[in-house]
Image (cartoon, rainbow, N blue to C red; front, side, top):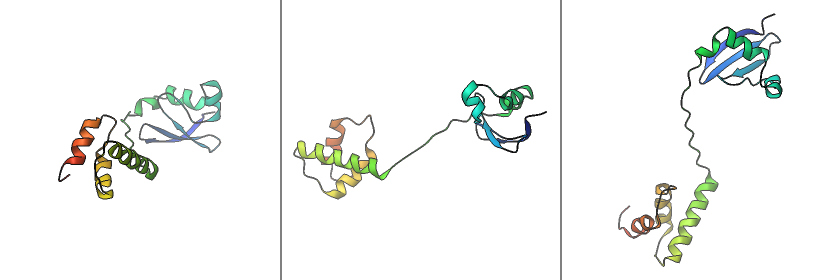
Length: 120
């Protein structure tokens, strides 16, 4: 009996409807069913591979941008601490303007330059 009754191609995978009526997501390397989680193989994945359905999956790069209020607040707190230690006068508006410019690659010298510029 076929394991896959119906399927739909989605970004980076397939949504299949199994013979029991349950829906699972299949990617080029996995199935979301419990059986695949235990055995690293399942009837859905094997059948999709046999039918050539895995060839329909187009790997698209996934980019995610998360900006939580907590991260933003911590970044502002860090800037405030740094500028205070450097004895640089600042306003809350300056902190808010500097925060989006900060990255992992931002050097302390850059932050000092930005903070002492007249216009950001």
